[in-house]
Length: 177
Image (cartoon, rainbow, N blue to C red; front, side, top):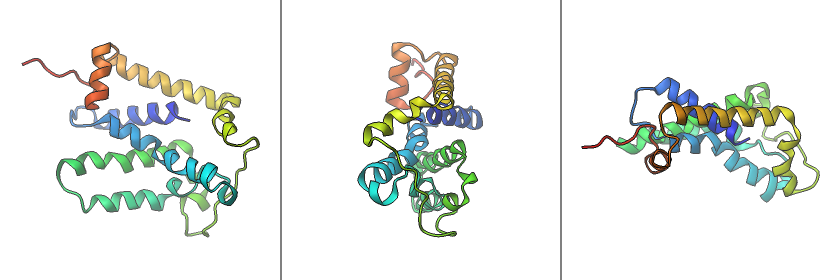
């Protein structure tokens, strides 16, 4: 699920941080899909025989707390922007409902192994499997609509507006001087 995580996370961060023009929504989007960017290739492709799951290390509280610990050693602007990564990543875990799987969420407190979730059909199935579920399709549509709503409500659904969002990560147009 890509749009679900992107849309919901961006809207939550926008709502909580609204009024803060320094939020870089590109960083928020990166953090929103970071657990899947880490776990899907490792657990479903590279070490498929060992893990057989797309929810392993990056879907745990420990790794997300480690992201916050790294922030303690950072300073200045970079820290202000980087703090959005673990916040967005934790929102991803909440959107996935990971707390309902305590063995995964609290890893390694209840053991070091991960639950297997095999896919029939290989790597291609990894991308097509979500399309078979009406619930996942509904979530993806909701996420896409949330992103669309946010862009429209900020007047960013023009060519220039989209360039601004992609170039700066901001939801406001640069003011003319």
